[in-house]
Length: 216
Image 1 (tube, rainbow, N blue to C red):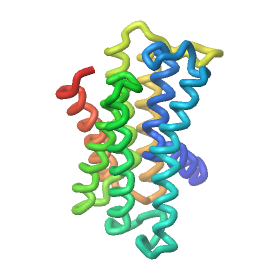
Image 2: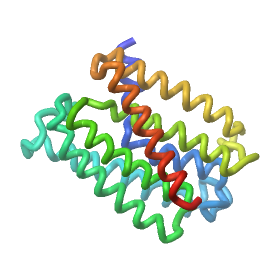
Image 3: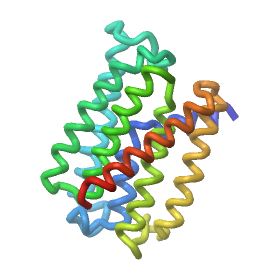
Image 4: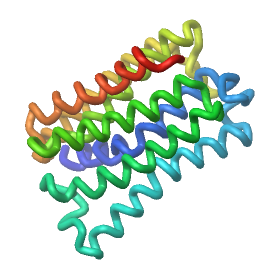
């Protein structure tokens, strides 16, 4: 059970949320991204760019902080260890949003990159007082974003090639996954229940704010 919980925690890493969302949106509405299907060259290059900027580079920066003595552990078990990584990730996510505003991607995805940035900075503030679950922040943001995609692109299906799923079914699946992620963090003993609920709330709130005040 511990191995399963660890595996779920790894694949649901908060830095992967932006890439997962892009995959979902391209698979459900590729024409909004200027491609006919997800495997087109433009789509693949966009996925690589987002994955590199939102995951690879921030992860590398965090890894380098350990030998430099800027953090005590890569697990970031204390609140102080999280400050540097928060700043690194926030800078790169804000940079992504600034680039996406030029129309490279649909406004819906551009605004989600802003929502993720807002979520990071809100989590940074909460981290000063409590050890909030960043996995839960990511899952809360992802779940609400899928809900917004379902309402913004009615009738669209998630086309995986071998199967097509309604976005409502995808939303139900994401909610189940979000619950499993929260349970896994509790099972591994890295968070308490309030940390999980605070994370879900902040992630969802960040997406809701951009949905209310940013044009789609």
